[in-house]
Length: 313
Image (cartoon, rainbow, N blue to C red; front, side, top):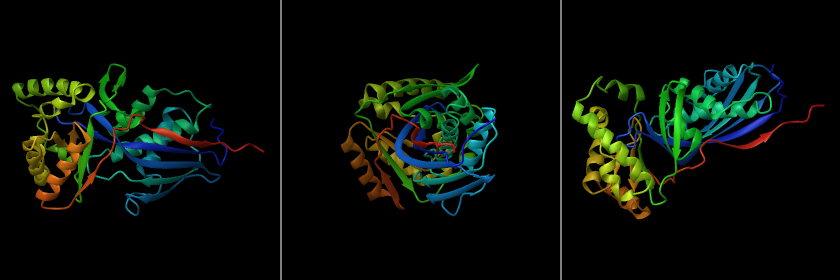
């Protein structure tokens, strides 16, 4: 049985993520230095109470149906522990519905908070955390970099979800261009065909392997390495302005792709100055307002930034 004392609290920080990176559909993900912060405190009273500030305030649920609360409950269940009463305070800065892994970050923050609360009471591994998070998210390409940071290759093997973390070349400079409108991941996936031409599959295999080399060793190859024929063209009709701007950016020599399911645009610059010129091009050519974010690659992933346990009287 859980013996958590009321007042026990943890605070975790989780990065945004961008998945696919062009050709690495449902496989590659990158953690970015845009963060959601979650504090979870054990209470005397049963149930879950959620307070949200920042992105999603007044919109997302504030009871046990909240995604973070459901992730905590799933982790407690996976670890074989009953969940105590909890008060959650979430401060969100990751945009919702824009292809930056906000749901993955919510799930990871809950799973990591649960692990931290249960420290010393149960043993858990990185593999278990990834398994719980993937079961909720449906695929590991966003939750893996949110958990572990850096560039991750994620797959599902005989033993469940797996990942390999790689360090990104210091010359790689991400730019994220975020529109005001959102995009449903479910809608984006519904536009994906069940099969693709053989030559397109071969094309993406070559580009995704090249992309690994470009990101960890040779950033000058990023433009060629981010070409894709598996998913972006099929989803273009649902986000025409994203598609138009990506075409303009790539024609100007910038490695631009759809960030996750979109509609945000990810530009992988080979030096810091390149992303400034890419942002200016969008400012000059866009038909609507796009917010330019200049994050670094996050190398730590989800972190516990405070953990307090009151002394029993």
